[in-house]
Length: 218
Ligand SMILES: C[S@@+](CC[C@H](N)C(=O)[O-])C[C@H]1O[C@@H](n2cnc3c(N)ncnc32)[C@H](O)[C@@H]1O
Ligand SMILES: Nc1nc2[nH]cc(C(=O)O)c2c(=O)[nH]1
Ligand code: SF4
Ligand SMILES: [Mg+2]
Image 1 (cartoon, rainbow, N blue to C red):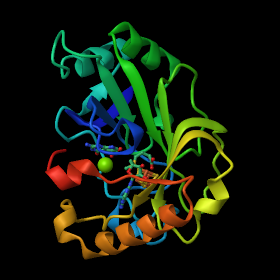
Image 2 (image 1 turned 90 degrees about the horizontal axis):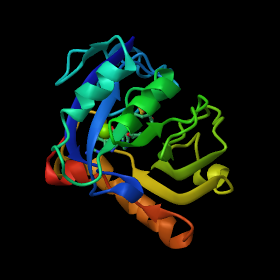
Image 3 (image 1 turned 135 degrees about the vertical axis):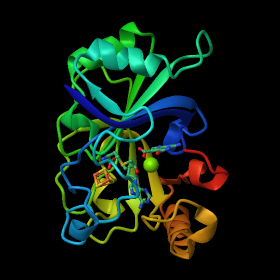
Image 4 (image 1 turned 180 degrees about the horizontal axis):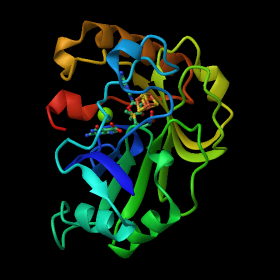
């Protein structure tokens, strides 16, 4: 049984695939926060900008089989156009994403992207793996396509990840969790300036912005 909070067709807003059309499949649940506001402060990850509790979002639900979920995602892609791309996110997608589901996405014609906090092993067959480390949570994934670090995190400084086996190293300015529009988020503006300065001083790192919050899409 797969539990999905929501699924929607949009543009990837972050990282090296930013601007690319994708169906987002947001799995329910995370291992670093239970998703309840009252427990946020005591959690390993305390800045999450996402509601991943339950299955009640747009196109959310419970799916008994990998084939059923892949068919549900396929229906959200514009038939016959482009290279179908699904981004598995959450919550923490690696609590649920398994080989049968990757195989089912591939059989439906999709490339499979994953956004993970890196604390759980990744099944084989993922086409684009993005690891986004959190606080002092140990990263167990040794190789990824992109490392995308939310900045600043006092317990997860970029220096700790600079030697990881990744093709791209991104800093993503930390947004205020409850503000959906960057234009209304002065803390994010300040974090963007700090991330910019870090990338200028450490050119291994690139700046990535949350395009979806700038243009006002999901
Ligand atoms: C909601 S998470 C879900 C996937 C996975 N649990 C993870 O943390 O990577 C998706 C992406 O949003 C980023 N993110 C979460 N909260 C954020 C915030 N307040 N500001 C900027 N990025 C944030 C995460 O670091 C991750 O790259
Ligand atoms: N457009 C868009 N791009 C995204 N990239 C990563 C996201 C996520 O929440 O995992 C996300 C998201 O929620 N929306
Ligand atoms: S950002 Fe990722 S790891 Fe952190 S609480 Fe949200 S879903 Fe979990
Ligand atoms: Mg998001």
